[in-house]
Every structure is written in C-alpha cells, then in structure tokens.
Length: 156
Image (cartoon, rainbow, N blue to C red; front, side, top):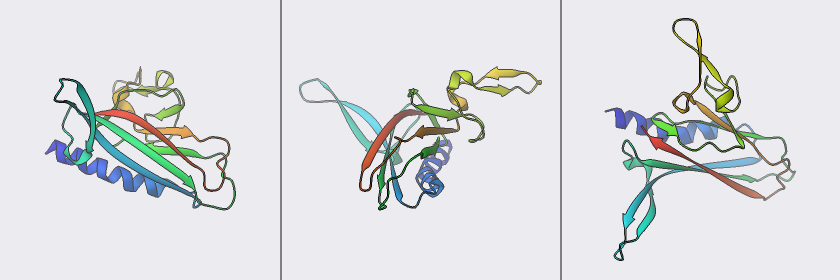
C-alpha cells in the first residue's frame, strides 16, 4: 500500500512540476527512472535504466529534467523548482542546487537549514526533510537552446 502511494506521488511529480513552470517560452520535460544493476554474461555489472513504475524500497531513482527555450527571445534569470516526490529521499547533493525543507518557503543549502521541534526547540534539517529542489538556470538561454540536469534519490 505504501509503495503504491509513493508511486502515485511520483507520477503526480511530473504533472505538478510542469504546471509550476510559469514561463510560457520555456518547455520543461521531466523523466524518472529506476537504476538497476545486472550482471552480463561475462560477469560484469551493467547499469540499466528501467521504468519508475516498478520502484521498490531501496531502489536508486534517477530524475532527468530537460528544458528548451521555444520563444523568439532569450530567457534569463529563471529558477527551476521541483518538488521531491513522495517516497523519494535525495541521496546526492549538487552544489548548484538549493533545497527547501518547508514546502518552498525558505531556500538554502541543507546544512544551513533548521526546523522547529515539537518541544519548541530547533534541529538541523536532514535529507529526509527536503521537500523541494531549486536550480538557477544559466544567465541566458537563447531561442532554440536546450539544457539538461539530473539528480539521484532513493525510494524509501
């Protein structure tokens, strides 16, 4: 049951994140894969990307975000924001990304973010607290230009 809820949350990730992009000239596409390691006939490990619809706890997830300027003018100063899908735990921090642990209200590096505790204190945020990721795009994306980024997470 928990796995189905997590997969439903990940399926919604693509729709929600796409709708959140308000820049009409910038097309954003997101893909999610499960990384599987198989041994080939020579005994060597081979990494294969499979559909994320079959993710299980402990699986490595790979998220790929593609964007393209489909307008006739350059696009500048855009920040790309993605919610972390329910059931996914970020495993590698990219120095160029900012994170949020409160639904996208405050942004920063994980080690600089704190959360309130039930007893009125505060604690340092941990990877399991991350709710959103944000990247600042290059200063200028010319018409027709494309770019891509990827990040990893683990299925809880």
